[in-house]
Image (cartoon, rainbow, N blue to C red):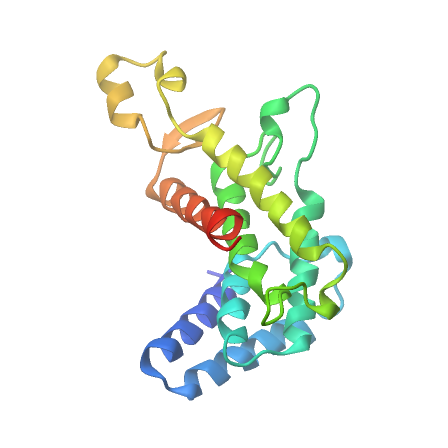
Length: 214
């Protein structure tokens, strides 16, 4: 089984392991893998073809704390640009879609939106210098664009959460069990732990960037 996200998850895992063990071998391995993605796997992609890989953004952000590198930051910017450019900003016919992403099917879903908000929140700080100002090579307004995308995405994720209103059509027992969880989409009430886990992480990441860091 192949998954686009396996390399990014492995990179984040190795970088996190290095952070815990203080063994630089793991961090250097993570950095080499991230460089391979930037320089080989994704080297010839067009701007709108870059995978919306939140795990890779997590990984690059973790590596950057100890081994900052302009090449990896440039690649992260390409991924971020692809994510932000694909986000639904306005939709007069379906205003509830604003902030989400159309990935699989005709409506935006919880998981894709939550994962992208996670990635944007994780990578935000590498576009700042040590004094909290926007780093010169990031591009004008980069952090502002990221925060705007996070805000739209987090707002969409919160709207997706099962609340009293969205549970009215269910029996009282079912409604009480589902309240607070996140369904797959507005058309699919299916609950799975991945939806709620990623939604919670997205909300915490958004809070850190939008409120705690400022």
